[in-house]
Image (tube, rainbow, N blue to C red; front, side, top):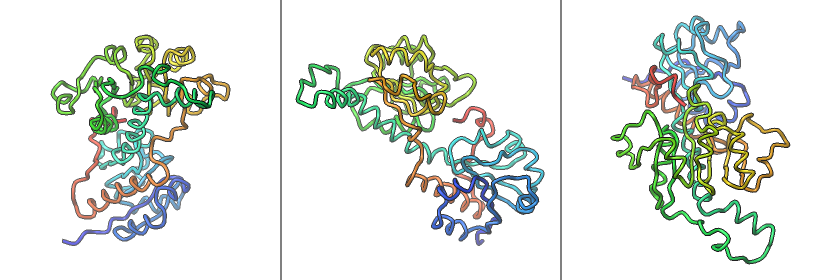
Length: 335
């Protein structure tokens, strides 16, 4: 049987759609589906006419929220394909409760985040941040090993907080190095940890013994300040905390105090607020590296997101199961 041509609509700001779905990408979607419209809101009469026909909504960053009212306006809707990571800000639980399938590009978006994290873990072990600053300041040869006797990655312990999609990719990538990897995740049992090739440990042990702590847990009410002031206090002098997840998972004030005191290193791609105040001490702290949330998909990496959702659309057209469908029971705890 030939694949059908689903009726689809894109729902996101135009600026996002043009970035994630450039002309060459749109041609691929138009080849297998009827594109009914490009929506930035769901309330206008024009939007309602599109929604009345649509079978698949393709959403992205900044999409209008999909709730019961939207479902009432879109009686033919059977699937939502989210061309980004987490769907939680954009989708009410009622959507899956009513039988609409939901898929996201979280697995695709996880790849560049994991690549960034692994790169930073390696650079942290080599003490690149302080060495580069020392070299910039003195601009001459110096005894690197005497100044940084713990530099190097061989045998270092890496602590992964959260065996999430990203966390698991990081774990897999770290197998190329001579690291000891330990994981804290309350949902990870010993058998799963063994299958991943890591040891499952308590959060306290991970923080107390790891040379680099990399945060990959989801942002939930239960994970706010997961690494709290007490946990920051457990980290040994000279350790590095790397956060590419969400700023609210870490007690930022406690971390800042130890970083400014020269006791810890911090590599932060996420903070609270999203952009720190201009006079925040982490900007100028010798032991800190801040980046403006660049770990996720940007630039050429956006093609991976549109490609992942294109494959999901092909599966819908062929009547096949989705590859990345979100299970209703996991919606509340997904990253």
